[in-house]
Image (cartoon, rainbow, N blue to C red; front, side, top):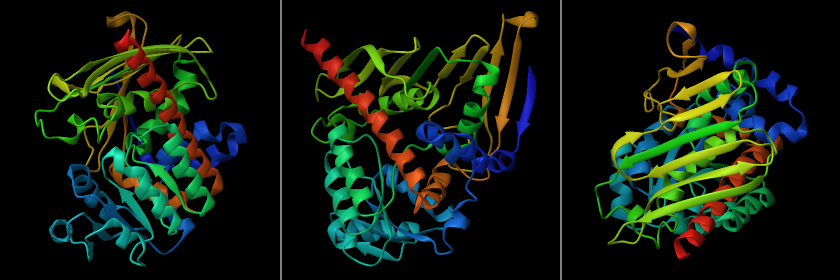
Length: 383
């Protein structure tokens, strides 16, 4: 096995060149790589940090709070919960100066410039819309209720001149940029993308088991990452020409706990996917295949260094196994975790219409394909 180390600063320096190299029509597909490639653009946008407020105090909010604190040009200013006592406990835990007993109170205040919405899917649109109306930038956890709901959010952000981004972490790690900028040379046209995201969820009280709060179940929660990988690595502008999808439901809650399927595109490529949250082992595999070889990752959703600075690896394989083939391990360094880079890239987006529209396009395409999968899965279930 050969080994290659790639310093993230080398990738960072290519961000502006990559923007200049793509045409206007390709910006939406190129921008995730641009986001992942550099965080230094934050300094060029504004000298004042964005003051962030978090809506929600659950598990993902607890993971994200420290990420905001290590991100450049980001300041964790406040948190809101339905109960002021819960908000204060969260604030004390993470060293946050402001605590609110309602999200509407926080959004109407001058305490924050931007909000991270870490609520169940069912509550997300209302909060995002009010945030935009109050001139607050919006970073919303995913998925969204459906494409129509997401478009109402992005339209409100566009109308009020505020930023928008969804909370997908892996697109911001420099590994994603490295794969996208070398894919054509290494493997050629990506005719097959296969992904799996499965994990075990043993807490029956988790909101993922509540169809009222998380209507799409595993399809929306884990499946978002499968679909986003397809959005990131398929050719720009492709259209769905066929798909099939199946779900399995939990017998007690009726939540969709697993999903599997295939999508065919008009350029002849396909993506196959499996997702679920009742698996006995964590699986985050991604394979991108072309005539020139294959890229493979065993941690595409959350690289092994997630939560701390460190490299993320992937393999390039060509030919047969053994001495007649090629197997190369590629390591891409990052000074900060992908989640922290997400907030730095958000700050870089503020005030830049091209970056805003690219962010919106990536989110809307992901949700559009996710909606199509869910619709087909329900049709198959009823038949």
